[in-house]
Image (cartoon, rainbow, N blue to C red; front, side, top):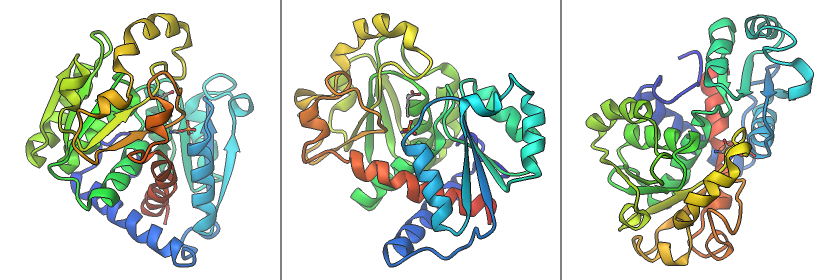
Length: 305
Ligand code: CP
Ligand code: NVA
């Protein structure tokens, strides 16, 4: 694949290779530093929404691999506003060796990829967050030494992070349960995209409205914000229905002993996750954040070297 837009475009074998490469690059980095395999290469980073982890981990990832990264914020290039996405893609392709974009409409990152003749990486769209999901698989793999047969329970809003996590689990054979209020579940499209991969890997997908049923015996409990970037006008309506989906000590008791708790961050502490759980002994949220950098190096290496 030229691009990394959604995990449904990639084969299970390529995603497994990506994970293996991330493990190798992380070990190499921790042992003293990465080889400069992206020397003289630059990644343009287009952001239509704010970011801490994605921005800094991609920038550091490029640096560690001998290349550089350039930040293009929402007011700088006006993607699709000051000029068309197709023109931005073709112009950037003459200057840089890769483009990472965080956008609102998923179609916009697809359009960038269609017109760019350099690799395009989806750094989050309204419907997918593939880099996050693969970083999360790295974190789960490091903790359990395997992915197949584990149970991942996602609690809260069936958003972009949940959709990509489902695809990653479906590819790699972890079981996936999700509990959301009705009306906030994963789209039919998300579920049907995952099914063919799940059928091959043995991943069992179950959807619930009751959080305890989803969490029952889970090895991983995962949550994310109830109000994603771009949904701010829906805040009041969302908060009204989401409180029973808070990941707290009471819910955690229904998971497997020693289950880990994950959150892609930023967290709204006291809403979707309580402080005691986010900062407790079962929390994996900071190793999880660090692993964004290690998986991104693998994505960059695979697409740009
Ligand atoms: N998890 C994540 O993508 O964080 P940022 O929005 O800070 O990049
Ligand atoms: N679902 C969140 C993820 C942030 C990393 C959002 O889209 O805002």
